[in-house]
Length: 429
Image (tube, rainbow, N blue to C red; front, side, top):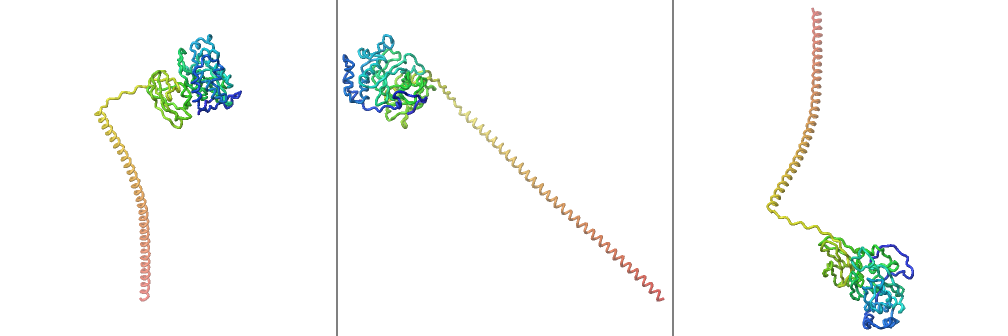
């Protein structure tokens, strides 16, 4: 089960390891025996105690249970004394004789009976929360007194006054409704409803602070008897929107105990609540049907478990449905389709144009490359032709020069022959 987050506190006396909760035996026979005794009016207190604890070998928890049951069933809450504290007799004898007491009288009577039974018992003073108006705001009506008893070296809280019944919020009327929920209850859950002046009597590993206590939800009997602990935090004020719900989660020792879950909004009748149980976690959807500030009471197995206050703001109204013009929708759809088609064609044209431009550029590059290549070939051919022409011209020039040389040589030979013939002719004459 989750723990309150706070600071460690040195605990004196024998309060170390006090946080553990008692494993309660069956009280069926004890409760039946006490019920059979009745009010025992006219009997001295010692006689009543001896009758209730006649089996002195019984465990102290059994004897304490008998004292609790008898007092809670036979002493009513003194609403007049609550309004006139100076005139209120809070002694154990006054509670016994008058059979009415305020919280101090209940605590004094219980301690006196425990002392007579050999049970270690103390009276604890502090604050207690009983109404949703106490969430976030405490006053003099929250001053309270209760007890703690020691069993096998461990101290456990007990509130006989709350076990006897309940009053209205103004302490005008008392309604007898016995419950054993406040007899050695789960200490962590108890600490959300009772805040002792001395922190050591919280009896939990990490004592809570006053702020956490003040803003915790109101604890009902079912939270204690079924050990239902808020897993989503301990703030008692819920915030939300109207006409919705707020999901709360609660840890349990045994979620199979849950048979019914109901919710009361404001002071209306209870109605079934939507809930689920998973791995000993109880999930409840708390409805917030209207805006404003009001109480939300959670009941588990037809008994009050918690009371929350709700601070709910009005949800935004849902927009009215618009009249559908099908012809206009069809026309708009057609126009949109045309626009999309045009836009698509335009994009395709742009893409095609870009592709053509790119192709043209590639073609131009290829043409220019071929032209450059041809030009180079032409230049090479021209050079070759010029070279061939020059060679041919040179050869022709050389041939002419050779022919001239040969002609000159023949002419010279002819001249020489003519000269020799002329010489010979002269000799012959």
